[in-house]
Image: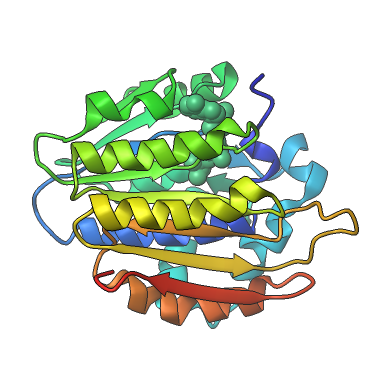
Length: 284
Ligand SMILES: C[S@@+](CC[C@H](N)C(=O)[O-])C[C@H]1O[C@@H](n2cnc3c(N)ncnc32)[C@H](O)[C@@H]1O
């Protein structure tokens, strides 16, 4: 049932968009002294070899992070993220890619907490051996969609939730929407980041509008949606055209950061086409 392995996709354009946003949000959260809790509902293995057979099969990172490493005109938010990727690699060579838990670990402070959920036994094992003994970090081999009940609101009343499922199962779309709603019901101030693929599929097309409606009614500070379209669908209408990141209660600086960053990413990551869009609520 759990066939998805993120190692095939690590460092691709979708990871780039998601991780640029994640890093920008965590930087913002760290501006205040008070600690926060990051809940990563679909954490993956934590870090990935780009030289291993999974990543080498599709070489997806070559059209993602590798294109960025070769540039000397990075916008500040991209430069910050690329610097963390460099730090995760021991030398100048791009051999490893940090997943969301590794990126977060480089940014979290002693007063912050990380709660990682990963269902795949192999991915969980790698994640647990990487971060399981780190103070402030808990690694759970359980359903991340069910995690919010026990994790929100956190004692410090500051939280970021990353919802990043594989969307292999059609049910992931409905569960993602339900998870956003639950997060905001439990803690209306939570910054909730949702990654979504752009596919020619009804559920994928409908999810952003549904998330917007839920954040509008359940959140405190509106929402923001960043979309990067980089390819055309194939003749049968298959293939990932790009991806989107939705943020409920976005930091007030995020829209300006993405306005500067998205056009650059669209140009540098373009495959057969490129478009970018930034939408936000009146208060977002
Ligand atoms: C897209 S990957 C996560 C990548 C990671 N967030 C990152 O940015 O580096 C999705 C992960 O979710 C795991 N997974 C699938 N269903 C899950 C569930 N219900 N609860 C927790 N993990 C799940 C998969 O095994 C996979 O490792």
